[in-house]
Each structure stands twice: as structure tokens, then as C-alpha cells.
Amino acid sequence: MSLGLASVLVLPRILDLSMVSGWFPAYYYVNYYRFGFVKRALVGTLLTPLNVICGMDVRLFALLAFSVGLMVFTILFWKLFSEATSASVWLTVGMRWRLALMFAFSPAIFLHLAYDAGRTDVFWLSCGIAALLLAFSKSLPFLFKFLSILLLSFASLLIYEGSVFVIVPFLSVVLERSDRRRGLAAALVYALLMALLTLAIQHFGSFEEGSAVLVELLSGTAPGLGDPLSIVLTGDLVTDNFHHALGSQFNWFGNNPVILAYALVWVLLLVRLTRASSDFLRSGLILATPFFGLFLNIIALDYIRYLSLVLCVSAMSILCLLVFDPVAARGLQGRVPLLGMLLLGFVLGPFGVVPDHALPLNPLSFIMSAGG
Image (cartoon, rainbow, N blue to C red):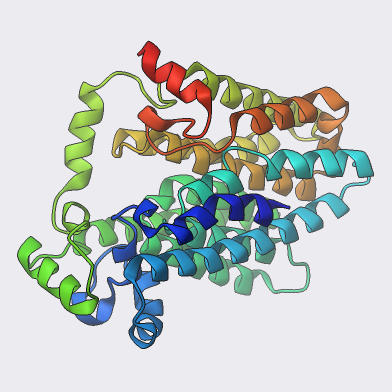
């Protein structure tokens, strides 16, 4: 169902490639072979042999690669859902269905990712879910799980260094919770290494030869690639955005009361889960850490995108809590909480990326823009 809903949003872009943002194709072609060590180049590095063989339109290639990534993300997400919900005897069949539908129709998970088709977020999110599935394994040695999570998190940073805000705090808490004896030490080491690796990527990952050389290399890699990445790979985008964010109004929810209302209802659901759990503090940490991702708004400007990513990882945190503390499922009892979220998601449609298009396919978005 979630793939079907996503396909409705992806298909028009396949039929009309001009709908695919000019930003996206370059991420599937920039690689370590021709550009040296540059940030956000892992996906392009892995796909370089394939895109050379295919020789298709750069936008079509990016869209098809994204679609495969979205399928992988979807399979992993529902695998996590299956393991989490089967672990709790407190969840009835009806509650499981309502929770599944809430996630499937959420404006911030499959619908947002599909509307923003072509971006590489699905790849690092898949790394995050794979890390969670490893953490839940009871047959694997703890050291193997720790190293695997470390490797998957490093891959996430090489896909998008901003993922450190969204996924690393959350996985740190998961590591601590996964082993009573070694979990805390592993979590601290993990968080420290991820912070150092992020700083290294940020410092060494710029393309030092400048914009002109970047344009030449991109054009030589595939016809039709322009220069959408200079601002990311050759400039100090973090500093520029930081000064811009400090000078702008509070805009983390796109100044859109409907978006804010959805986020608040989601948080109220998390509060219910926390109160129903057997360990208020540790359960609260699991559910709260994905919201560190909102601090991306201080150094970048895709406000609604970051809220969507935060809520996507928050959905993973709900499933994690059901694994670690099955009794917390009592917070999902009653039809009102889940049906309310489902109804809101069904009415809103996909979240957009920027404040001007916070609800891109919803008439409310145009009303808000006209009112502003």
C-alpha cells in the first residue's frame, strides 16, 4: 500500500522528467573516482559503473535509482514494523492495522519521500533502519552489531553529512539500550566517532578546484548535467545558511499552523507512549532524540524536509520502543489517537520541502501562501 501511494507521486515525474529538480541528478554522478574525496558522493560512487553503462537521461537515471532506493527503504521499514509489533502482546490486530495505516498515510514518511523524488535521503534512512534491525538481533555478537552500526552510520554521513543530527543521537540511545553491560560505553564511543567523522567530512569534503572545474567534470561525466552542486561542494554553505537562519524569523514549521498542528499531535502520541512505558526516562530518550534533527534548520533552509525526516525517524523510534519496552504499547490503546493521526495524514497529503510549498498538493497550502 505504501509503495502504491508513493508510486502515484513518482510516476508523473517519470512521464515528465522536467518535474525532477535540477539538484538531484548530480548526486548520482558525483563520485570519488573523478572528483576525489567530496561529501555526498557515496551514492554516485556506487552507481558510477551502472550509469556509464546505461547512458540514459540523467534525470531518468536519478529517478530510477531513487525508486529502487525507495523500494529498499519500504521493505526495511515494514520489516522493522513486523518485528516490533510482533514483540508486543499489548498490540491487538486492530491496533497494528491502525498504526500501519498511520505510517503509510503520514505526510512525512512515504508520501514526502515520494513527492521529493530523486533526493538521496532514502539511502541513508535505509542505512539507519538496517542498523536498527542489527541492534535487535539476539543471535549476533554485540561487537559485530556495534561495528556494523558504526559502518552503516558512516555510510549515512558519506551520503548526507546532515544525517548526523537525525540518526546519530537516536542510534546512540539504541546502542545504550541494547546491552546493559556494554551499551553505555559503546554509545559514547559511537557518538564521539560520528562527531569526529562529521567534522572530517565537512573539512576535507569540499571540492577545492573551484566551480569551473566542477562544471567541466560534470559535463564530461554525463551530457545534461549542469552545475547544481557548486554551492554545496565548493562554497561554505553551512556558514552562509547559519547567518541567514539567524537573521530570519522562526520558521522551522514553515510558519504553517496546519504543519505545526500535525507535529504537535504526533508529539502528544509520543507522550502517551512514554507515560505508558515501564521506564519513563529511557523511553523518553528513545522517542525524543530524533527531534535533534530539527537543529538542521539552523544551518540549512529546507525546513519542511527536515521536519519530515525527523518524523520519519520518530516513527522508527516508536517501533524501537515497542521492542525494548513492549508494555509501552498501552499508549496506543483507544481508537482516537491513531485514527486522529491517520485522518490528519489522509487530509494533508505529502509534506513539501520549503515553507512556500509546505503542503504542495493541498489547497490549504495555497490558502496559507495567499494569506502570507
